[in-house]
Image (cartoon, rainbow over all chains, first blue to last red):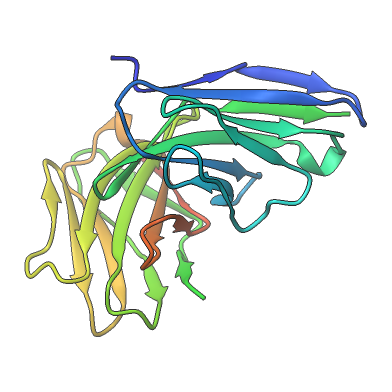
Length: 110
Length: 114
């Protein structure tokens, strides 16, 4: 039982490049989330998926798209990366009241 | 809109002593949940404790307890018998009434001294 896994752990992009951050959970949770964490701040919600087949915008969705591929996987895509998207990205899934987080992806956009 | 406030950017505590981390929240909804997460220097977010707005008793999990004062809208985390491994950033968070997302405070850095 790996919990919530994220790939890659680190990534460096040039402005304008695209990439997809992958997230998977093996806990059979319905709800999944993508957050970003900027230095000195708490996490902010980008997108979430309450169940397979549904996605909704969070607090800071601009510049991102998501796909809930199946119950296990929830990916985050940056179509044209910008330096403002340099951050640490966390995926989470929810069981009952609690969200459990993956290890994070550190993204640097030059 | 919901808001979480953590006013202590950083704290020092002596090993084996207790430390209280402050968290106040603002919501007009009667149903909400409050959480504390720990983020060590390695970066992962570790769930510590949960308190529901209708829970009658304060939540406890091992050395962690949540001092929930509903009228004052505060949900302070108490860590008893601090250990060096408790050195980390601690975040307070609140679940929205639709149960779909967490709103986080800015965090408090705790440094435990030997």
